[in-house]
Length: 355
Image 1 (cartoon, rainbow, N blue to C red):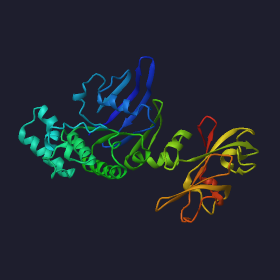
Image 2: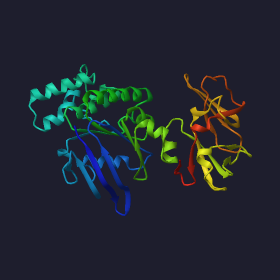
Image 3: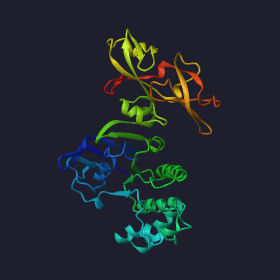
Image 4: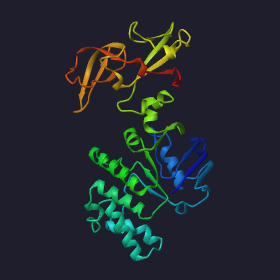
């Protein structure tokens, strides 16, 4: 099992910096997810750990050994890519055993390792098939199995579920979580899907523009984001943001004609005229909340177990409200959307959290 330490990691392509001063500790057996929007640098960071991209500055340690100039094949790392990258002319067992064969492993050892991993991944009945005879989920399991047979110290996953449909993504998430529990190895997983991050990770690393915004356990990031970007990125549906200004300790909402919110613990120390943003999660609206917004429902989504209303007063962006037991809401209905101010978060005009 491996412990990774990244110190001052940077990556530049010419004059363009794509990774800036990343410092990160990844404990042995930890499941860490790099998450962020497209272009934030998460895959580039993963490729530097794998040895597929040169590190422009900083140091990468695996179990205390400096890895900057160590060849990718000697880092004890296995990587699963977004594309399955299977050899079409080989069977499942040949694909899974190829790396071992290339490394000079004995035939009996290859057979035993492939059989062991195939059983774990429920591929033992498919070993003689070729990739064209497999479903997308089965192909991805073969790609994962090809990595497992090498007994690596660290697994790297680069958006492995992006090519799967919604049902298969859920199934594969469960299988990857189960696999981590069984193998007890270090996993670093890249995705732009925050639902994958929340459901899989022991620790999430939120990236934006090549920088780490926040690191923490999934619920820690959800409940206690350090800034507006993290608050908006973690959570589905995302947090509602209401622009406001401070007047005599009260937060008067822009676009809401005199409506205000009282957050005495946060707003009383702010100067009059200070512009802020109030963050409210959809599920924090309730019938018993102490503050309210007068809104008109424009769109209703019934998702079976959950119902979401998208409402507005006509002057502002749509607000997402989790309706709970009130499933009979309909478009065009006038509502008082109540919420408890204790659950509201406050951000300054630059997006930083006000505590």
